Amino acid sequence: MATLDRGNQGARWAVGGLLLVLGGPVMYALLFDVPLMRATGAPAFALIAAGAAAGVVGLRRNRRGWVRVAGGASVIALALAVYMFFVLAALPDKADFAQLEEAPDFTLPDSAGQPASLSKLTSSGPVLLVFYRGYW
Figure 1 (cartoon, one colour):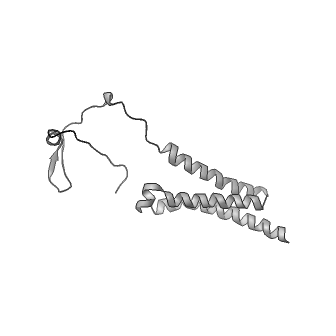
Figure 2 (cartoon, helix red, strand yellow):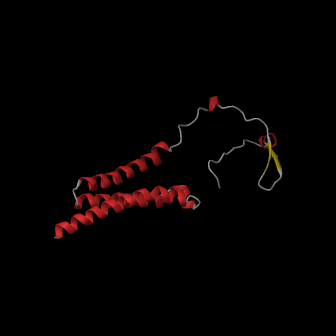
Figure 3 (cartoon, helix red, strand yellow):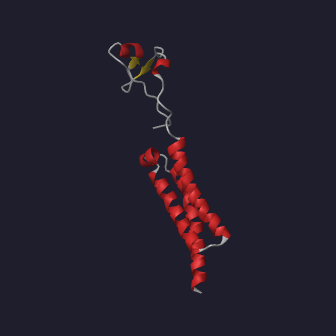
């Protein structure tokens, strides 16, 4: 009877782990407006890692095929999330500055609403233009 309970617990661990892993990206999407989530994704990664750990516990407690698939999928999902975040989302290598061109002159309102032109700003020294991805 103890082995049957242990096997059922293993199945619950594996399925629960898979649900936690799948909940990580959902949580990231729902809480994207939270600065910590947008900047690091750490809470979503913590949920994915906890799900992968639960999947491994389920694998150790139950050796049935579908439990192996659920537990293995949670570990593979963790590896895939880490790969996508650190490898695919990495910035490209440094640009060759010899190939860069000078920006055309433009005038836009500054943070105080006053017009600011690029030619006026560059007359007092170098100017750094920053283009933000996403939204604030």
